[in-house]
Amino acid sequence: MASPRHADGVVITGPVTHHMERALRETYAAVPAPKIVIAVGACAISGGPFAGAEAAQGGVPRDIPVDLYIPGCPPHPLTILDGLVRLLGRVEGSARSS
Image (cartoon, rainbow, N blue to C red; front, side):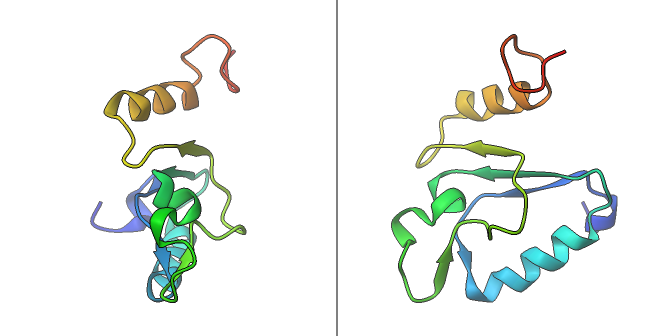
């Protein structure tokens, strides 16, 4: 999107460095509610191989609520699709099924 104000959510695909944390927080704040946050890959979830590095703080900050974690390093495309379908509640036994 040209602006986070026109987006439905945020997809985080890499480690959150100290320099990018502010940009992530500003982007998250600009997305209108209801908003979806998706952390894709080990780097976005926990920092992956960059965890513990001086420049990286790890994954998504704890105060930003993540709706979907998609594991992998890198995650398989089918894993990403499966996670998105489950988030939408289209798979029997998922957390948001109706």
